[in-house]
Amino acid sequence: MNAFEVNFDGIVGPTHNYAGLSYGNVASMRNRRAASNPREAALQGLAKMKFFAALGLKQAVLPPHERPHIASLRKRGYTGSDAEILAKVAKDEPALLAAVSSASAMWAANAATVSPSADTLDGKVHFTPANLASNFHRSIESETTARLLRGIFAEERYFAHHPPLPADLPDEGAANHTRLCHAYGGPGIELFACGSSDHSPTTFPARQSFAASNAIAQSHRVRDSRFVMQNPPAIDAGAFHNDVVAVGNRSLLLYHQLAWLNAKGTIAALRKSLPELRAIEVKDCDVPLADAISSYLFNSQLVTLPDGSDALIAPVESRENPRVGTAIDSFGIATHFVDVRQSMRNGGGPACLRLRVVLTETELAAARQSVMWSEALYKKLVAWVERHYRDHLGADDLADPRLLDESRTALDALTKILRLGSVYDFQT
Ligand code: SUG
Image (cartoon, rainbow, N blue to C red; front, side):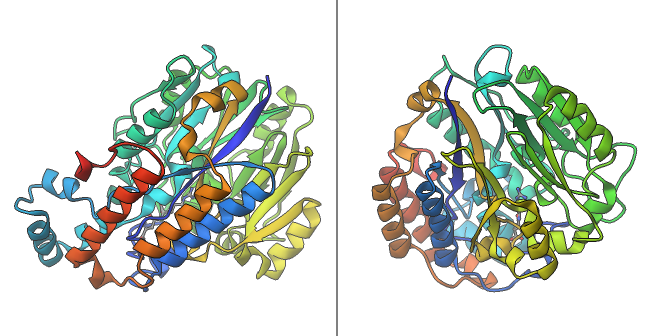
């Protein structure tokens, strides 16, 4: 059956800011309290999607989440009107306000793990929203993500939705999940990268647990799942997700030499099932981990163009690093560069911004069409961003009650553009 990879990109939300919330994510830590530009961030994301669609790739959008998330504050004991709650949390717990204001849902690679129907025993596409339990500001995404995915992929004949895993099984979604296959519509091997219980990083935490990856592989009824352990020194260098040190698409796998424990054994085993596997190892002497992480080379999107050729969509930062540039030249893959600098400053590159969903033609037709990309939708979204988004946000602005109103007005308008119905807490 003919199948496609559809990239669902998270639209950057109106409260995009730099709060230094992610321990182990070096860009997030470094840019703490820098001023952000939400308008530019959202437009950069939309420009990337437009570029993808122009390459002939299938593109779709996921809306931002409601932020600041007053419902999370109420769960933590705050009472009164929304404006009163905002004033109180700004005074008593500014770090909590920053956490409930993060636009981190833009990084849709962390929204869920998706297993295409060709990989699963029941022939359905399976979804598990990530619990993102390692960071509070991210953990509050899973409920809305679950609601959105159920709304977009509603047809029970084709789609199976699982609840997020319990918090003691930390799960970061597709950022640690790579599907390798001969053709999108044929059976795939699902490779899960996770922290090793025997070898812990010394500085930063491993965010993905083996127990979580294993639970997902089981509940999705994946025919062929494999597990590879993240290399603790890579996590300590800032590879908080696997997609910071590896990327794969169909039978092409690009990975850093220090990404995994036992990379060689893993590749050899994969090759037994997928003989045409082309695994490109980038040596640490050519691109040291620090350069891989600062340039986000591996956070490129590796895609198959309509003519069957491969293309790499890399962040502009990787062009600016000579060692990385030389490595890219050696791959022999057509490479395009995109500017998502606003997101990059929080540790989110091109690949972080999208959730890959492989769908057959029938499944694609059964999904909600109003979130699928078109030139008309692009124009509407640009006008919407220009109308509702600020071009400057500092840490103190998060306490501004007008920002809450502006964000809600913007999201209310967006649900109409995307014809999503009421998906936010403030709408119910
Ligand atoms: O979870 N940054 C995100 C970046 C996620 C990148 N995603 C992938 N690699 N797939 C994170 O660390 C920073 C927010 C702040 O500091 O304001 C943040 O959440």
